[in-house]
Image (cartoon, rainbow, N blue to C red; front, side):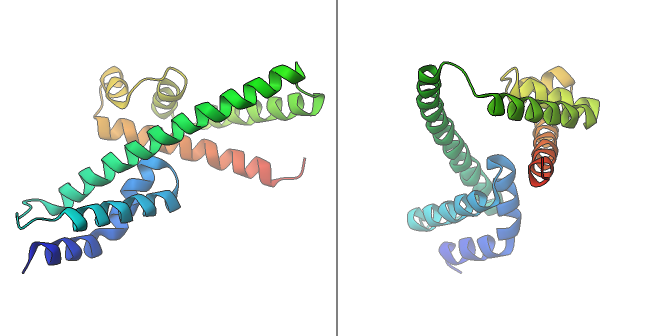
Length: 172
């Protein structure tokens, strides 16, 4: 069996797992699917006759690298947008009363969501989001594996997102 055939079979057999893995990193299922598809195309287009010893691990590494690249570009884009928004808000000088009330409500919902989390999950999420700590640093501080630190941050973010969506779905 040729290597490309093996790669295709590996991709098809583990596609759902790969998408879940990518989604956990990027935070959006649709983007996770795009990352996995891009990883497959990259591997398929650069495939050689060389046999890959651990094709699942190799795919996961490609997916991880592409997902991190996507996050970096999104962060850069968000910073440009934030800069533009900041310049616009300076021209306005201060937010409207409606914006203030809305932001206070969002802050209250987020505080409640954080308080609902198990202590270790909350600490990991706060270290990551508020202190800007890397997963490796969080793992070291909490004496856990990097994988568990990633899971805790992901679970905390998912919970907070869910609470924000629940609140935004309700009429004020």
